[in-house]
Length: 331
Image (cartoon, rainbow, N blue to C red; front, side):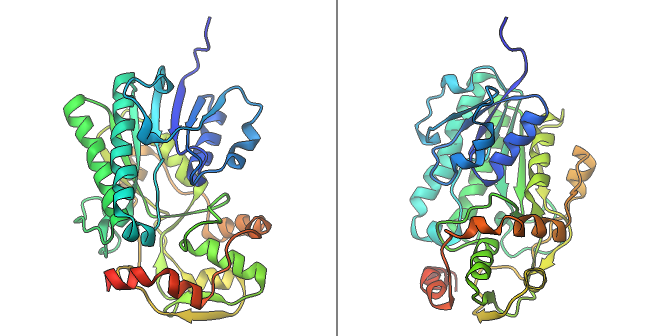
């Protein structure tokens, strides 16, 4: 007889969030098939599963998937995390972002539909809200400020369209500011943690945007993973859930926890002063709650700070150059 344990497809499962989702699924007795082209993800994120027959990695670009792809055969759930992020590259390469995040999502949706999965969980972005009122509820008006935000929102709309037209059970999770171990350390200038950790290792000042009083609803990655698995396992479908800790933290607080001098750089257009998820819906409907405090989460990352040795070192001059497009189009 074949293995009767349920199997889950995780696209982008070698990435920062995806690899933690894989860990949680395995701990809960699932078999996992990871689909990842390793453009952003890393095999190292799954290295601890290398001898685990319950985890397989298929190096495939989601844009190449055929609707009858055997990779989805027998899947109970599909958790769709594959995509490309970052603000500035999306401004510079909007066609690529729409291709991957929208058309790629459509291909994954078709595969999930043809395979008859019980639930499709989409990784959406809180960037769809633009400069939002806070705390931000799921019914807040949508106002994407740049192509990345638009592409993620259109991917979400496609998912719910497949739900309405084809009966594919879909839930979407709008992630606020995820952080934690395995967060990307290379590539385009972006997340504050990667920038600050390399600067700390190099003994350089933290490049602080504005006065540092801006706050972000940071949510630790294991709490993110738990939310995605809960959204898959629930009987509830057709819902959007905001995902944050519900306790915004200032960038000054992060600097305080890390310790070190700062160098101020200009505030950027299109960035909110505060992101703050109203998480009442996900708490009540999915019986989920954040477990890792900001202080504990940062401490877990600091314990692995040596992993940032090969990350790019940013300073005010290189940041100014990297974000020139941002100022040009969003001012």
